[in-house]
Each structure stands twice: as C-alpha cells, then as structure tokens.
Figure 1 (spheres, helix red, strand yellow):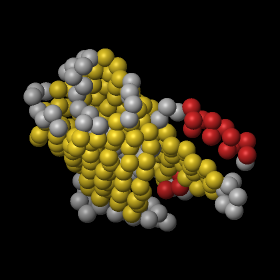
Figure 2 (figure 1 turned 60 degrees about the vertical axis):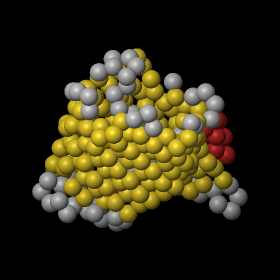
Figure 3 (figure 1 turned 45 degrees about the vertical axis):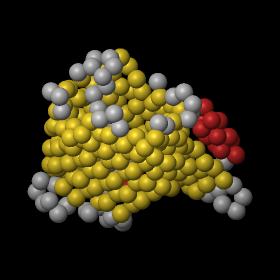
Figure 4 (figure 1 turned 90 degrees about the horizontal axis):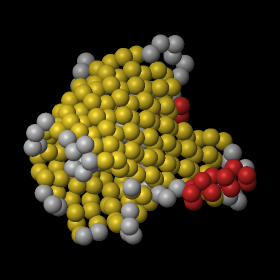
Length: 252
C-alpha cells in the first residue's frame, strides 16, 4: 500500500495539471472550431491520498489533443478515474472520445463522433456511442459564447452478467455556455439531455458548471459542480450522481 501511494503521489506531481470527470456523459464541448490552424491540447490531473484510520486514494486524470486547419477540427479526448479505499478498488471509469467538426458557415458546424466507455462499478463492461449532427452558435462575442446542438446516435452497451450487447438509438441535445467575468476569470457551463428514440421518458442527462481562473502562463485553476441522472440505470445503480471538483489544467 505504501509503495502504491508513493507511486501515485509521484505520478500526481508529474502531471502539470484539471480534475477530469468521466461520468455517464463526457463533456466534449469546450471550444468551437479553432480559428488558428495547428495542434493544441491540454493535460489535467487530481490526486489525493490519506492514511491512518482510513486509507483512501483517489486519482483523476485526462488529456485532450486538437488539430485544426481553421475550418475543421479533429479532437481526441481521454479521461479516467480511479479510487481505492482500505486497499479495495471502489471506482474505475475510463472514457475515450474521437470527434470531428467542420464549419459549414458563420454559425453552423457539423459533428461526427465515436466514444467508448468502461465503468465496472456501474456494471458497464463497455458502451460504444456513434453519432453525427449539427451545432449552432447562437451568441458569439468577445465575452460570451452560447451554442446549441443535436446529434442522433447509436448506443451499443454490454453490462456485467449479460451475455449479449444491446443496441439502441438516442437523441443527444446539448448546450454550451461560457462567459468571461473578468480578464482572468470565466464561467463555463455545459448540459446534455439524451432520451431514447423508442421512449422519450428514458433519459440520461448531465449539467456541469465551473469557474476557470487563469494563473500563470498556460496554467489554470478549475472549480466546479457536476450533476448526472440516468432514469433507467442497471440494477443496483442509483439514478442520480453529483460531485464537486477542483483541479489544475495545463494547455499547449
């Protein structure tokens, strides 16, 4: 246990950076089409450990890599969470996301994406998402950005103790809002609403709101809240999840 704590502690220090959140829905909405061509990205991480009466380790990490030519963007995003309590693993969640956007005009851009997720503590062996749709920037000023989007998608899931995967169609409706409050402080909010095509009463949803404070250079502090709901979770899994978080991000 002490060796594991030491390794994870050194790993946490090595990360130049935000708390990564890989819930039932991954936030992939940061930024629109990047105007400046080239490669950019960010790294993030949060590590905590305590011992004595209670031994607990928590590690959250993630990264994002973007390529743009000014009219289109390709994004690869990976996030993971791990938690261990008294030497017993209590959380493990891994998400990978690949997305392509192409600007279609002043306000519209296309969306195509593929995502895979593994979360055994929610009985999820794997979940594939494949989708395509449109995003529209409703407001775009120096201080404010408001974008709405819609993407029909195919969802293929495999749960523990089930011999077959199941495939269903969902509609993903999303909103992204950001506002610069001061020169170095901004508010970032995103929300997803994802009902089944076969039954609009079966819904997954998430809201994520955070304050982002620019520190020095490319280093930023992020403090936020995330709430999630799955109206039809697997047996033994609660419908609602929430968490508060903070972390550092390093962009390049």
